[in-house]
Amino acid sequence: MRYHSYGSSDVLVYEDADDPVAGPGQVVVRVAGTSFNLLDAAVRAGLLREVFPVAFPHVPNIDVAGVITEVGEGVSGWRAGDTVIAILPATVPGAAAEYVAVPVDVLAAAPRTGQLADAAALPVGGLTAWQAVFEHAAVTAGQHVLINGAGGGVGGYAVQLAARAGAAVTATASARSRERIRSYGADRIVDYTATPILEAVAGQRFDAVLNLATTSPEQTARLVDLVADGGVFVSTTTPGPADPGRGVRTVRVFVRGDAAQLAELVARVDAGDLKIDVAERRPLTDLAAVHDEAVAGQLPGKTILTTSL
Image (spheres, rainbow, N blue to C red):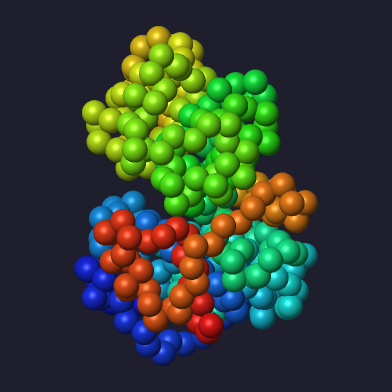
């Protein structure tokens, strides 16, 4: 799947393309699965062309799981047949294809457990959560953490990581995600469709608030008010005010590829300490429909796309 110009989902076309070749410092991966991220739709629409300019025709999708088929010059430690996962740079040809060339420095060995295609749900979601929880919020045992948007792809990982770190986790999620989020270790779950979060936690403040859901500036400001003095507000969506006072820090997260962190996430998956959740698996030819459903808020959760089902 690729597109020859920016535009609506209609620009996505399923067509033949030349197989990639492993350049120096690269491997070619036979794609087992790729997962959809909202970033893919934003790049396709041209909303991020100043930040992530792409050359046309462009193959989307930055999450990949698959098997190495070719090793380029200067690559050591990897060989054909190795199963791997990675976040691809957003400006290079992506993983919505049978084969993709991947820079070796973003690779991590795939989990040994579960389906290989499903492992494509780990890189972007898992690394975003890791960096939000540990790098930016610096969550430690005994802290009280609020995770707004826990039912999403990043939120599920954030709940698991914060709970495993020993924090007391309050999570917002709909009834559809409630039991899954509870199984991840959340101490309290607020069904935001039934009770507004501000009403549910009235009188309580948190050492860290992670905002993983789309919120208006007004809603964001109210979430910042839930941060305790000297605490931190971390958002993957709407940024908080630069200086909200009370010693509160506000941080906006932009995920970056980090092979070492990704390897740590994989180790936790293999140890049974981190669960990968996949809501549905669909053929790659459904990609345009997935874009439309995501924009309309209709995806049931993390969606994996494969070239064959």
